[in-house]
Every structure is written in structure tokens, then in C-alpha cells.
Amino acid sequence: MTAASDTVQQKRTLRGRLRSDRDALSAAHRADCANNALQHLVTWQPWAASTLVGSYLPHESEFDPSLLAQAARDRGADIVCPRVNGRSMSFHHWQVGDDTEVTIGGVLQPMPAAPIVDAAAIDLFLTPLLGCGDSGMRLGYGGGFYDRLFAQVSGLRLGVGFALQRVSDWESEAHDQRLDGFLSEEGLTLFE
Image (cartoon, rainbow, N blue to C red; front, side, top):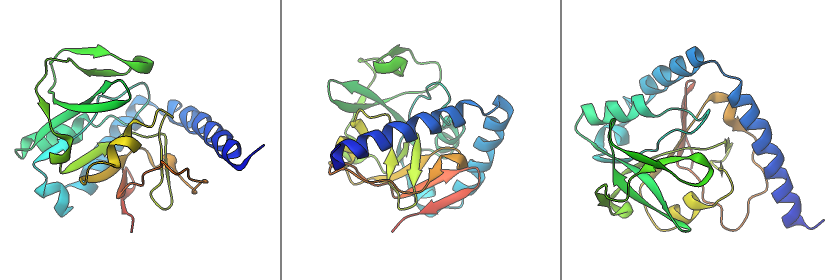
């Protein structure tokens, strides 16, 4: 095996373990985690100053950012969510009650007619993930959508998840983009 194929296999194994661990969390625990995460976020100055927040519509056992998005709306920020377009993503205004459609892997996304925003204008990205490494490496689902996006924009990249998703670093690949921070029920960690 080559080093590249070893890295791919390592990521595949880690994805499976982290998804299984995340799937095992109860609904009550998930709700407590969201409440605790919000408490760690509200005193962070970049959160308070962000006026355009990129969030996401949760899929399966992902950390549900709805409480965070509502708190941002309550303080006057606009919320946008991603939509897959071929190999890239665009961000569209979305709020509870708006229509959605299903994309790759059963993920929900805003409808194509939802008003689009320039991703470069997003102040803060609440980013879904399977794992977050000790140095801010993000383990997603393998499609590279966020890596391609983050290579082109400057908004803060905050991974959101459960504390059990925080793991030791793995071998990175050339395309991997790091997060600026990781938010869980245990706190907010910022990376250099």
C-alpha cells in the first residue's frame, strides 16, 4: 500500500467509528449538548459580531445547529445553508419552514430558488463534521465540498459536534483545509 492509500484507509476507518459513536447518542443527550454548546458560544466576540452565518441542515446523527442558528437570528444575523451544485456548494437564505430537497446521501438542502449569497461574505461557518483533530483538521464525509469551499473564502470556520468527535490528528492530504475552532458541549477550542 502507498502512503496515500494508507491515509484514505485510516480516514475510512475513523469515519466509521465516529459515525457509530455519534449514532449511539440519545436524543436527550443531543439536546443537552446543543444547549451547553450555545452557552460556550455566546460570549465569543466573533460570534457576537457575525452578521452572516453559514449553517447547515443536520443529517442523521449530526450535531443539530438549529439552536445556534436561532440564537444568531435572535441577535439579528442572517442564516444561510449550503446547496450542492455539482462539485461545489452555494449558500442560500433558509429558515425553519422553508422548503427543502434531498441531495447526495439524503442530505437536505435549500431549494434552488432560495435567495443565494456570496460565500465570500459569510463571517462565520458552522461546519458539520465526523471528526475534528487536535490541530483543527476536519474529517468530513469524503466529498471534499467544504475543503474546496474553504480554499476560496476567508470566513471563520467553526466545526460543531459532540465532544466524542474530538480525536487525535491523522495524516492529512494536500486538499485538506483546517478549522479555526471546534465547538462542543464541553467548550469552544480555538486553533492556531
